[in-house]
Amino acid sequence: MKNKIIIVTGGARGIGEGIVRVLSEEGAIVVIAGRNQEDNLKLQNELEISGGELISVEAELSDPAACEKAVEVVVHKYGRIDGLVNNAGVNDGVGLETGNYERFMKSLHNNLVHYYLMAHFALPSLKISRGAIVNISSKTAETGQGNTSAYAAANGGRNALTREWAVELLKYGIRVNAVIVSECYTPQYESWIHTLKNPDEKIKEIISKIPLENRMTKPSEIAHAVAFLLSEKSSHTTGQLFHVDGGYVHLDRALANA
Image (cartoon, one colour):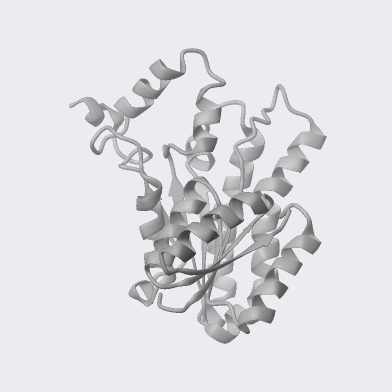
């Protein structure tokens, strides 16, 4: 990953922060793109002290013009893009019974549409570099969660776009894969869990059902999978949905307590 130019959306906190940290450790030049420039700069400054090279771009990714501008900033500064990690999003609880059209469409813009826009605007540069795209997705597209129709639909779209782009971009040598997240403790996850009754008990219940080691996935574990998929180490891997989840989605959860 040495000196590869990689854009990470929503890279200032949570899983995105974990991805930025690992890519920086691997020698990549990381671009943190997100709406909160204070958070962007805080992480950038910290990693620069450790010797990393990063830039941050303030971008409200639900705005198509902001997505285009973010890509333009990177191309203007570095002349190329080697990889794109679509990560930004929020499980916003727009359900079927409790939601409405306006909230549903807003959620799709916050969680899915900018995946398309960032890839669309970065594509001319990725074609030149024969780069890679990694989409961060969620188990909600496969398992459901309840009261999160919009987020589940967005993640179903992320998975479908991963396979669609892998096909469309074969002729350019651009690889496209996704990392599927199940239970990973982040600030966003913490906010969600505290909307539930008895959050401490709920956490224990969730962890008890994760087959491998009865623990949550670490952001760094997701990040290392992302780094692999961006690198030449995965040079013949495309169109894949990688579940980094301790077996949560696919293994019999009765195993967790065995």
